[in-house]
Amino acid sequence: MDVNLQNVYTEVLLDNFVSVIKQNVMFQAQLEIAGRTTNELNAVAAKVDQIAGRNAELEAILQSIGGENDRLKTDMVSKDSQVQSTETIRAEKDRLQAAVNEYMRRNRDLEDQVLKAKSKSSDALLSNQKTIEELNEYIHRLESVVPANKLKKVKTGSISQPEQSDEVEVKSGGSF
Image 1 (cartoon, rainbow, N blue to C red):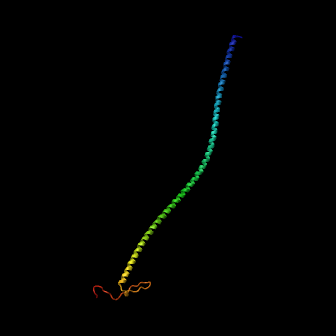
Image 2 (image 1 turned 120 degrees about the vertical axis):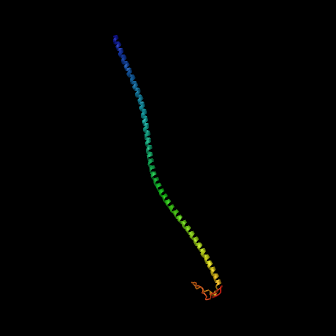
Image 3 (image 1 turned 30 degrees about the vertical axis):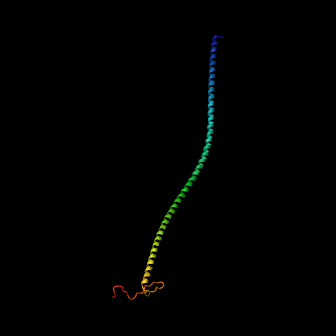
């Protein structure tokens, strides 16, 4: 073979060899990048699966909380009605207590009035008894001063005045 042909053959062979090596290196680099990308995709897929599982857990918790929220709303409505009932009872209790207080105040005032009236009537009774005693004493003195024949007898049911005698005694100063 010819040297020129051999040189060109070697040159073409070398160019082809370099091209094949470059393609091989490029292919291996692409394979490496594809492997890394696959690993990253697998890691992302695992994270997605983990997030999906966590999402399912959170949805279950959310449903549980939703049920608890509904129960709490029902309890709140029940408690509100109990509070209203309690407020109504408290208002009624306050009204009744005010009425009892007013009744007790009136009762105390009436008791005070009764005590005052009893005191007045007791004072009047004592005064009347004293007056009666004084009048009885006065009557006894009069009866002891006036002679028995001058007294008119008391008729049953009525008191009559003693007869006045025609004679008038003059004790001092003479007679006319």
